[in-house]
Image 1: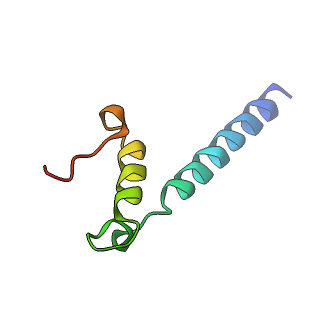
Image 2 (image 1 turned 180 degrees about the vertical axis):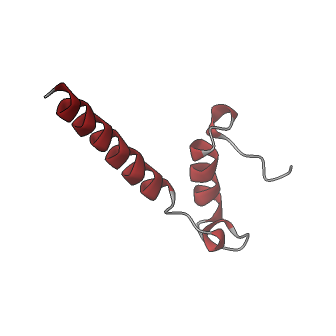
Length: 61
């Protein structure tokens, strides 16, 4: 019975990891291409997802 509980915990963890990665994949290359109307917002999201310092990117770099 203990093995079944462990397998259930592992499957839940894998499911959470899968859905978390799927949520992060919402941005595509065209979303962060300069000229996109939401370029700066999308770059901020990307910077936060990448865990850049302060969740900030510098467009001048």
